[in-house]
Length: 153
Image 1 (cartoon, helix red, strand yellow):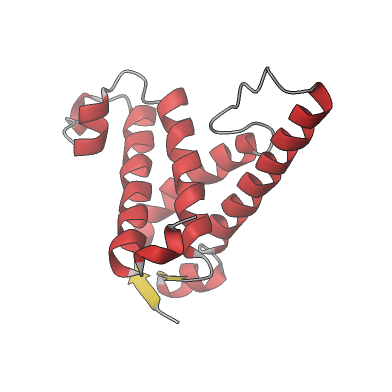
Image 2: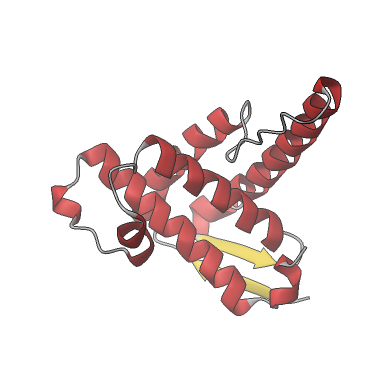
């Protein structure tokens, strides 16, 4: 089984974890990418959305589990075939919520290219943007360094 261990800077990552935890709490009750599904029977729709929400919450727990006591001791997180796909999905959910709540004023090109003047951003937006970039980097590490077949559904 392939495994990737990454050492992160605690002073940089710890404040971003507060943002992730706050958004993960909000995502417990609502999907990051809401589904219209108006054409479906109400009971079927409720079951479907419930299943999606359960899966999203499991993915978020997998992401948050990276930042356990061991992480705060040595700053290392590990990615492998068992957690890679859920972490990529959880990072996407948090990034969607970051865009929706904090980063609406930044265009797609700026967000994806990282072409933003940090000093021009309000502190909360700056922190959200840094979290957005951090999660994008986590996704890229997983995709680049672990076999791409583990993230294919």
